[in-house]
Length: 534
Image (tube, rainbow, N blue to C red; front, top):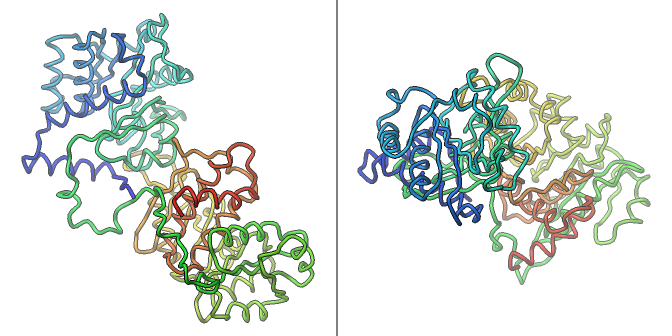
């Protein structure tokens, strides 16, 4: 898994490299500028075919220094380049000032305010090198500039030589106006508006940052390119506990999912799925199908007696058990062959259902328990159920369910991001996991999975892994079942099971494509697993 860095961590890596003599600040700035130009030409080869016109917006810090390197490199390649500075050149940091002076030897620099009042942008490439990962608050002075830039972002096609301009917008490190640590937009200081650059391409360096994958970050970044600038991460990461780092869920290693050739069904785990009553069993059946397809050896669906015939008419490989009341639920949960339980999809929220949740979470042999949907509502309503959660539990809330479970944490996350580093979805999920004492998967296109010890990963269904077809009824039930099936198999920790299931869930959606309904997700798993080499 790739690590996602905070702005503080990235600055520490750069500082250690410079202090150790590995590289100078000027060399890093030069490499960054060259990386941006390379990424632009890779993204739009038409721009590499001949000189065009660029506008480079440079900020008052080192991100502005990167901008002056880009301006110089483009001008040396024959481009017409206009550079604009926000701030006072004499107050630039030393390395940025050197690159400003180098640019001044071949080009001119205008004031950003003057350019903002000019007649249109009139360029093929617009570089946002204003703030990068350094911005910590909204800026009143730049509101009109960003609103004007927002008007241009509708056109993703580059049109070299276009008189009016419609440029390709490229952000250096982070679109200005976005918090690098949370992906949240800073509010405008004199209105209820928010501003940020909406880029077509964002080029960052060394490692992606948290804000590239959280909240509004991915939408404002457009596409994301990560360029190597020759940094070694170890000096700055040495001594940093693993649980303090944030990883990005990437491709699943096939060895994690293989089955023992000499194994039998009980050797691959028994998953138990609780169902709702008559006419309400569809969600649990989806979860059961997900658990079975992902490799659990056996799956049993436990339902009220009146719902047995309905479920039997639609299930074959999935077994059925009649569960009349809490006493019956307790008996089946105490079966030591049951390795993982999923409870909540289509369950209901009455007294009987609360008793079923209590039986699952208090089972003496402590199976893994995945809570979804109605079970999350019941846990939120009953402090005794919340207090009974343990480290073998997994909570899978979407935004509304998260707010019911952790109202104060959700309110803090929803509050305006007035300064950076802003409170992020990573912060919120870590705080929730610590309070609940179990793993929490906070769902969304930027799903965050956290363990009570602080271990955390981000699963992103964005950029080239976007899967908008998952916005369909029942897809979350399938995910809960997939997590349960992996836990039943016994090789996965709750944190790993949740991340692996989330990744496979998106791969199934991408494999099927438009027109997806929840029933399609489990049926795509064989194809996805074969694609992993199983």
